[in-house]
Image 1 (tube, helix red, strand yellow):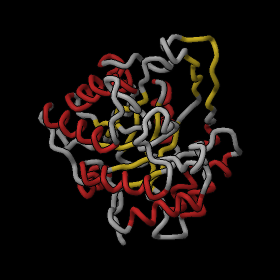
Image 2 (cartoon, rainbow, N blue to C red):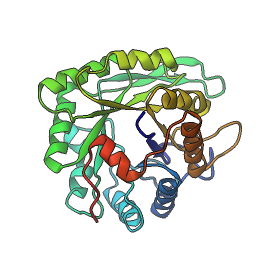
Image 3 (tube, helix red, strand yellow):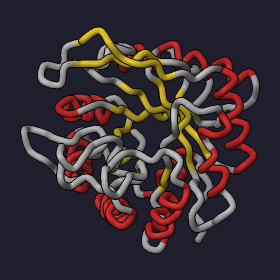
Length: 294
């Protein structure tokens, strides 16, 4: 089996009320990114946050630039941003376009979400569905625009999938000559969000059965909270990779871990499954990303 790759999602929408270790400031985010890379992460994802309220600032270009410059002083870990959902397509990736001109602040990577998803609203105490939610819309026109723009900017990209049908979109985009080879995907599998296949081995296999058969595929399992343990072990045993971090797992076993502790847990999971953990340089080779140049 190829070496195990670990991504750390540092903050997402997790607040300091939920976990005091979650990073808000550029200095906190950069510190965690560097420490997670040293612990075994090869990819780091983060949201720029309002320094007072913690609210995500989706297109805060200067905050992104500050974090990336701080990280680049010490680490070549692969960084990628988040994107607003409810803006015209050109504005959704405007921060990547702006930063692409600065070699010390640019993003090398983007994750492009495929298709549209109905998110559920759940009772925070029980996790049961309350009948509400919102829709995350990604049309084919949106995705094609994103892929073409990333290619023009020389930004390597992978795909985020929340339903099996999204895997079939990759087949369609291959016909347009837009899909990287190999294909790298993130499989989002959340127990209480009511989208996609069930978060278990059968659900993973359902995704993989729909994958392109003639293209190498590398997949990362992305889940929430306590599901991180069993699903990370499944990913490690089945030849996949994993995303972890406080953005997805703000609490675990009633405790408030750090990002580094969650990365170390992923490393231990890999070793229990008999997998070696990839270095950043090895991950770039596995995914056929360009080598990092300072």
